[in-house]
Image (cartoon, rainbow, N blue to C red; front, side, top):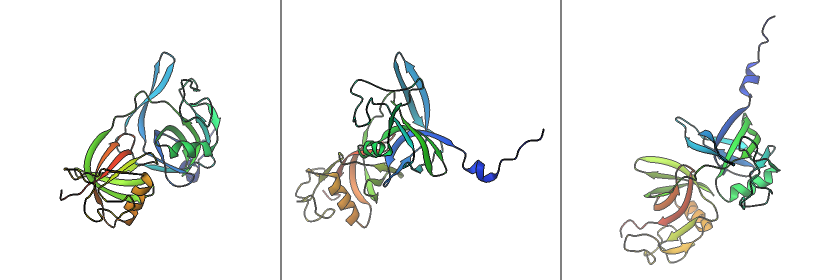
Length: 237
């Protein structure tokens, strides 16, 4: 019996799987950098250990028609609240809708296993991580990508980072809505760091108006690709 040839187009659309921290990237879309995922069973706690994967490239996917399994016992919960709903592989099994995933992504990065074909996610499952990655602080430059994403450059390296409505922003300016470094640094400390507490929406507006990368200090979580706090930095202080 001869072999049946598989058309090249069918091979191109074969399902692939990626694990990692997902971020919102426009309506109905997410972006995720593939990670090396190891399943860990510790008693009744089932989780995954995520580590950077060499040469991994970000994937952007449409999830509007994908199934979504959450680790929470109800789709509208923000946290597990001590109860989890996972299968034998540690994957979320509460059947939810793409809108529920959109709500979760709006709050920050979500650890996901995603099956996809081409540029469309087919099946998505949330999972628990063994240990949430730690944060660090650094000075560098920030450049806008879109309303929730920026490029941060420090030490000669550039990384793409996401932020949410919960991200803190501290300004050196008199008002939160002022342009970047507008006027005298009336709210800068002795190190030139902003002290005026503003919102993520103010950060978006300020980055939109800036023509060039701007000096900042940030607190961020590199492995999850997220920004926690941003300080406007007055370089001459």
